[in-house]
Amino acid sequence: MDDMENKIHPSFSDLVETALDFEYPGGPLELSKVTSEDDFVKPYTGHHFTFRIPYSGTFVEWEILFDPENPTQPPDFVCADDINCDPDSYCQMMQFWDLQSPDCLAKLVSQLIHIYKEYQISQILGFGKAAETYHSLVTAGVLVENIEACYLSRERKFNFLIKLNVNDEDLPVVKGLGSILVYAGLLFSLGMDGKILTHSLVISPYLERLLGSQLLDQLQSTSSFSQNIDALVLNDFSLSLYRILKKVRENHKRRRDTVSTLLGLYPTNVVFYDEELYSHIILLFKLDDARYVTHLELNDEAKFIFFAMDCPVKIAKEETIPYTETETLSFAHKPSTAEFSKYLHKTLSSKLKLFVNRALKSVTPA
Image (cartoon, rainbow, N blue to C red; front, side, top):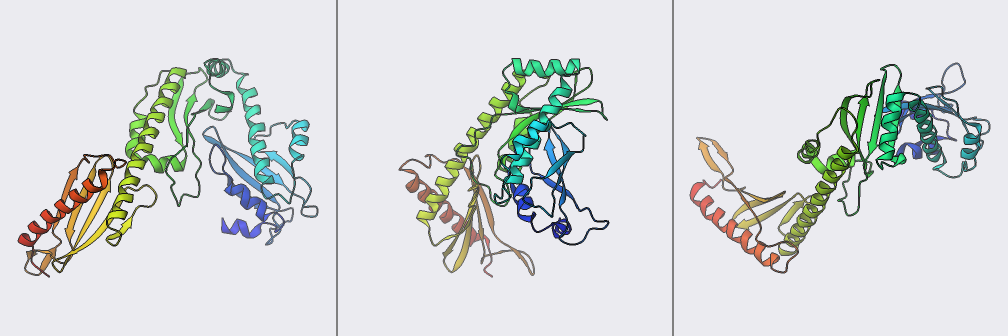
């Protein structure tokens, strides 16, 4: 990617960077080629850009052609699928073109996705079984904007990506992904006879990270599929996703409240906690000239993991290991209740005292 960035004409570098960072509903945009009209590419002369745009489980390539002599002029564009672009659509898109606006190229790409979608729907409607599937989805109440359909001529099959309505309100923030886009959908590949060849879940990196492998497996196992796309299956899947995200929200609030309580009870003992998902917190205690670590894992149940740093167990003549205990328990009070702080402090203190007493009997001081 760095090599391509070095070829970009300076007049268009900010536009390209903004377009690549833009959140598109189908996934991230990719820059696959930077060229120019020269016989060989010189640094900072690239003004022709080929973008790979995600669509219905595959990619479509659009080439954006700028004029380096007149950078303020709207670019031309060519689709790799050689579709015919309506001149009126071109004129409408160019109305918003403003080189001073850093997101004008990103908006152009969004419009190209729309043009490609309309082209693919016109293709789909030319095939009896695929057209029947498309009309059945719309008749069943699936919104047209939630359907991405395309005909893959080389494979002689059809892709239908049905986007699910996902409520992203109050979902945890996950850092370090470079994207906060929330989307999920079911991708079906159909043969020429309209029968389902494959089906899979398409989900944004944010949701994938948020759910984790266990909840993803649970989500994928909740629905069974017939030989045709069934709107009832889509509804069931949407309800399953809704219930799982509701559980995620509730668990996140519970974990956050638990961590907040521990930060309030032991402000000088907390050495680390997960600031994104509040999935664990580590506390360090010093008792009787030895240090003890409490690692609290916060998933469906709270798991205390205690180990002694300065009182290792001697397992061989010159080999020792930390003394460790693990205990899983369910909280008797919800973190939101007034009794929770007192209960958590009492529970942790009690478990730590028991651990220390057992540790002192079992370990050899270092």
